[in-house]
Amino acid sequence: MSDNRHISIPFRIMDQLTSLTKFRNPYGNQEIELQEVRFEAGGTPMLRLRIRERGARFTIFDIDPVTAQFWAEEMQKWAAATLSPLDSTTGQET
Image 1 (tube, rainbow, N blue to C red):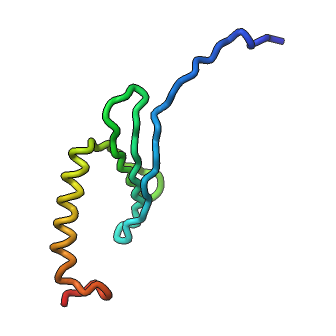
Image 2 (image 1 turned 135 degrees about the horizontal axis):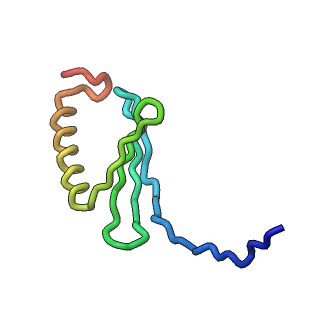
């Protein structure tokens, strides 16, 4: 019988992931999750966007804070312009 107590296993600090929100896109049934990523090596925390499409296919990419802010502002502008002519209860044009 071997004695493996002498084998040292290095302790590895891993990247830290924090789930911020998770929701479904009702028109494609994709599961969308936003996560904050803090890398083991340091540096800028990133926003990870994970889109799970039908089954096990994932689209994953990391976004820096400046890009995330720009993207959020552009999405807000589009949503405000698109929703303003719609009835909030029916989703139909008023």
